Image (cartoon, rainbow, N blue to C red; front, side, top):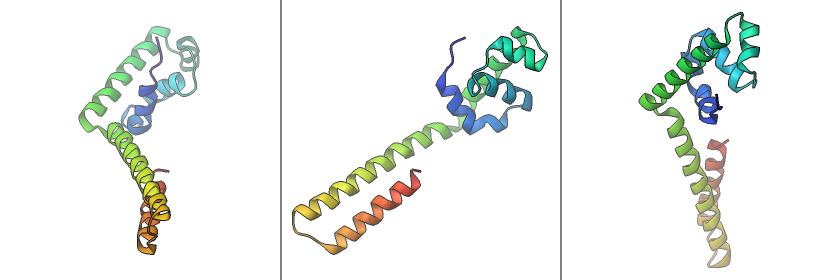
Length: 120
């Protein structure tokens, strides 16, 4: 089974909506990088049982993302905040090169700093 980093990302958003057992198994697999055999030994179930549990959890995570879109919106917001930060910096640079305005400088700093704070 090839590991999909998207699942690990979705686990951060929707992991609490899985059953405790599903969450444990999928976290072992994706976050702790344990093999199916290692998880099976730890949990006292078969390797096939681990695989089935992971597949069910992956399907649930993908379905939740399809319905709710929280991870997609998060990525879009991060990208938007990066664009805002870049644009604010460009305004600051232009303001320095051309006619300097203290109001423009202060507002551009506020925009840049707010976007940076929200993007942490």
